[in-house]
Image (cartoon, rainbow, N blue to C red):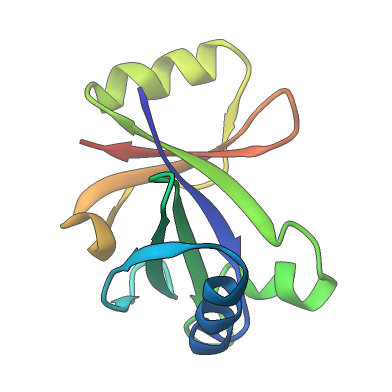
Length: 131
């Protein structure tokens, strides 16, 4: 697996993007993706060290990220990796004690490749992206 991004939950992507760009040297920004499957809006920012940040805004009141915003927890939400062998890596994560938080679903921001989120034994969220 290869590191892809850090996921950050925000209430307003435009404002958060502007604020992040004011403190981190951002060199590239993607278009805004609206993903009705995951019920979120996302945009990716890349800094001058080639680290990607995914800003995630809820899309509606039933978005799964609303709870984090309401409680102001898990704002720095997850670490994401791309997988060349999605099914195998998911099986290994499960065998090693990580538990799936979601089912694998297609994601608009990744050209409809599958993504899934796991909660690790180390108490953080790991996103796996089908390459």
